[in-house]
Amino acid sequence: MARRTLNDLVTEAKAAIDELTVEQLRQEIAGGDVTVVDIRDVRERWDKGTIPGAKSMPRGMLEFWFDPESPYFRDGVRFDGRYVLYCAGGQRSALAAKVLQDIGYDNVAHLEVGFNGWAAAGGDVDEVTPPAKYFPTQS
Picture 1 (cartoon, one colour):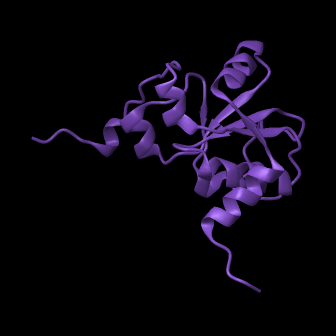
Picture 2: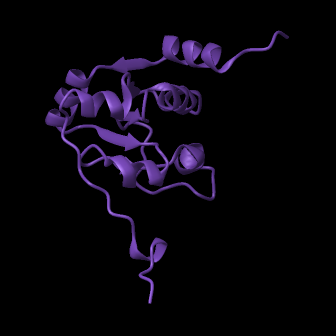
Picture 3: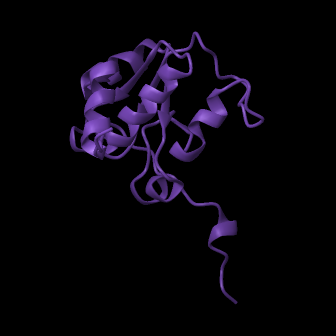
């Protein structure tokens, strides 16, 4: 089997999933029947903020939190729910959306331009403050 690159994997994933523009995501959020999922590392959220209302579900735990057979399954995740994932630039979220489809979630998409594109297009951004336990005050 020939080696496949990251770009190959992302291209294959994007061909199999729905990609949303910033405007399309704004419309879905306004419609109210979508769960927006921020798969970025928590440090990215602390540094740049997040799309208002987005659920933080880091990429490294996503499959575990979405699979009902996993001991880490999160209550409230539903196979019939609408999920739109995003990362910083659209590559990780494309791969993640494809994996969710592979485990049975049919109504999944990702934000093609990622959080950086959302912010550059003037999308609303909420600040995310790190919990104090990660940055204790020094005496």
